[in-house]
Image 1 (cartoon, rainbow, N blue to C red):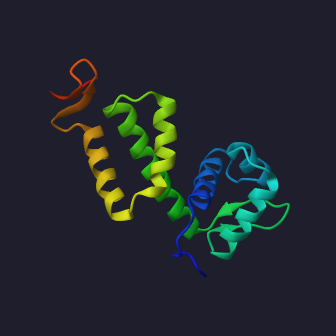
Image 2: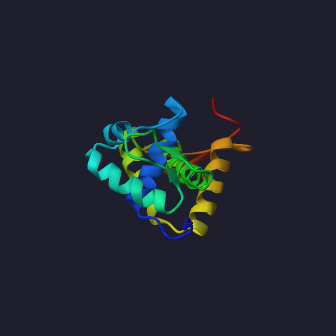
Length: 151
């Protein structure tokens, strides 16, 4: 079972999408995935075959699709990266939602694991604001620090 080999950004997106659909519906179908990702069912089928060969999804034609434990671990890691990036762009840099989402989706695949882990830790620390908050202030054209938690 090959699970450690590098996954393309596209295959990572499939895993993240399946994770999100499973959270909502308990299991995903090819049509659900195709609709969510705005791709054709044939594209989904090809990706699922590849992911199944790598031991990341349980897939059989005309059946539900579920993540294996290994696939769920990879999908959760990707989703965590995505959330941290999106939150940082929105809440710290004050980037509008759609732009934050698009950038997070692209960047979650491009940054090395070691750098991303540090970034995620920083983003989560800034989000928790134990001593204050850091926010982008467009009027000052820079970051500002505010003591205490903002509500």
